[in-house]
Length: 281
Image (cartoon, rainbow, N blue to C red; front, side):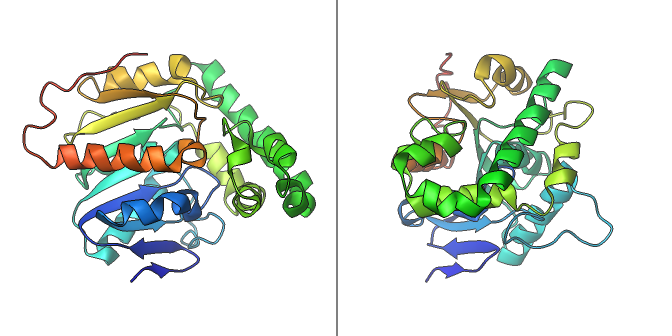
């Protein structure tokens, strides 16, 4: 039986699968995928510390990659999981790789991992500007979110920067995304912490990794942000995703659920990933 509260979702049975959402969102980013994934896995989808409806940050502790990863490790411990297969989107992808660095991942599916490794000051400023503008827009339109998101035109206005097809979302899904951005309690701290001053090392990642990047990613385009991850993880399998945006599970939940399930299944089969093709863009 599924267990759901404001801060997390648990359901399904099978090998453990941890799902990590992106910055300024909540576990419900994965909601449309859960019925599919929990047929194959025991799924845990927590809301990151300090995010809307999530657990609060410990008193006196600043937000950042280490703090968020520490919170996810506590989630794994409470679930009784020493390790798990992990899938993460954007900041969640970076956190999935951080957990792999700590030896907590059996495999990682990183969907446009973001938050650092931009490679240039321009890249860092660009992320900061995106955070600032989208947060300001979400706060300004928050009182009208339900009404605007009830119409396809309103969903396109509010979410076309993260979705290729925001009209596919329900009004409730779209409105939640706006509220999560506008009301994220740790927005200021997280904006200051991402990206950190220097790129994080990924030399301790030993598990199978799938890097999946949308060709329509308007937030973190592969040519500007993805290549540094490929250089840092030369053994990773690379998959380019077509006709989806920066948060691909919004555009194609069934396709992303299949992507995750297939890679996890292959990674759990000895030798199945040997000689896997690295598909270049």
